[in-house]
Image 1 (cartoon, rainbow, N blue to C red):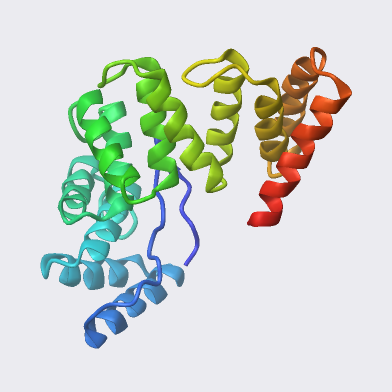
Image 2 (cartoon, rainbow, N blue to C red):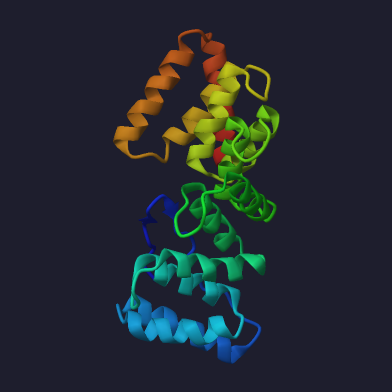
Length: 238
């Protein structure tokens, strides 16, 4: 199934992932819903996801919420979309927790509430959700919805960065560059910017490379070499 782009400020993640289900009949129905959605038959997809969502399937609840958020096969309704994401989030579905958290950050379909966003990000982050780790790290860095904690922010950025989350890689780079929550370390800052630059589009990569150049201006050639070797070692471990 095609991946959906952003809905407002909330990035809709992991739509219709091909997760196996304990019940064979349910798995087949999810696959049918996916096929309908991929074919652009949103009304059929809606009916299939609705049946599963009402039966309590968290993935279907999430997918149904996305349909309401996007207005695919149903009238666009952020509040109803949020309600279905909440049902999935209550069952521990990390993508629902992440996206609902973003909705609380913006006040999209739900009251604006940074503290609730933080709780949802935390629940998803505990499951290893990289975007949630980065989003929660940003809240700790800014003191939004949580007490400011640069060390916790840096730790979360590091976890997400190590999973390949590019924004988190830039965030942890600046944490090292500024010495916020971690010891100041230009080698580590350059290393993470180097890693991030390899997967960015040309325009954004140019910006990151300009930051690398600014940091490298105060580094020795040996430090730059060390940073690039650490970056290559990271790629080799992937």
